[in-house]
Image 1 (cartoon, helix red, strand yellow):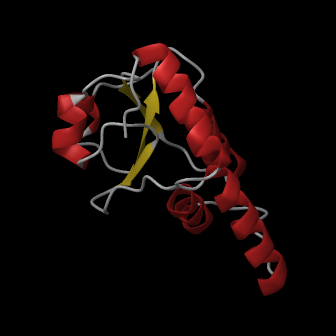
Image 2: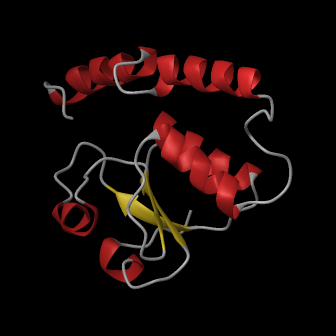
Length: 137
């Protein structure tokens, strides 16, 4: 993947997707897949996994990945924000069911897995603790 650095990506328009470079991080891979499924082109921007990422923090106020930045809109960092942006910008079949009941079920189950304090959130913390010696938020 041809990653841009923060300084090169910041002035661009369209969707910039900050991804952990060099490793297939599960959060970054999920975000890439969401936008690919919705046929939304994006510019990949490199984030150093476990790093301080000061230029990224200055731009987005976040140092983790993924971060979706569309034009001058606020950065999106949570899974539902990213899915909703893909839904708005993309085309083709929706990632979310039309039925309110089914949609609530999908969003609820996904949040229990991917949301803050969800199953995968704690798994991420265990991996970071093993890799870096401490959990980084």
